[in-house]
Image (cartoon, rainbow over all chains, first blue to last red; front, side):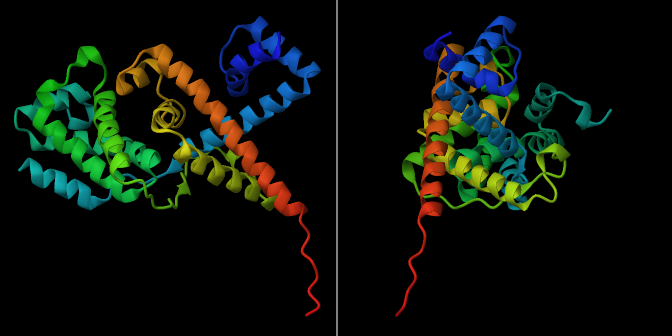
Length: 75
Length: 203
């Protein structure tokens, strides 16, 4: 695997999603011999972890005045 | 049988027959997702409130346009929200910083107790990531919000955006690449600031 091929799978690798086992193995092997791609994988993992945290950030839903306005429009 | 057990489509049918309670249930079920999407896309609570209101008013006026064969009601609502958000972004580029809290249901592994440095680093990364998402061009931002923050499938996201699944995949790939670049730049700026030692002032 070369750096270009690795770049295409770096996101999936960082997410630990289901992917072709041999592709995954080749990707990880590549990072063992390429410092740039190893660093790229780490950066992708930071993005993945951050996005997963952001997905759990509570926004609380729309305030009650929005529901009141919507229901008033219905009547 | 209570309204909570009804499907979205059944509630919509009841709503179209004049059942206000069915609409209220639909609103309660779907408003949080729509609001969150609009907030994450715009960074503005005011915009998110306006968009949420518009989405449900549009739904009640054009409910007959919804076709379950073409996707879920949730995707339909997100699609309406998307159109309004993009319109607002065109009109008003200013945004208000968001102050949020982590949901109570956050898995313990995500909160490292007794390690303030890790918490600080995580907090900075999250803020940096949030800023980076808001700085993305809208067509990249929306796939990040839909697929990564709302955990939609590529197919659902394609139905919301109105494009091919392959387009969602390629935009997501590019968007993640941009986020990596922006976070790298932010980290480099931060490390340069830490390396600069303040000069002693003898005045």
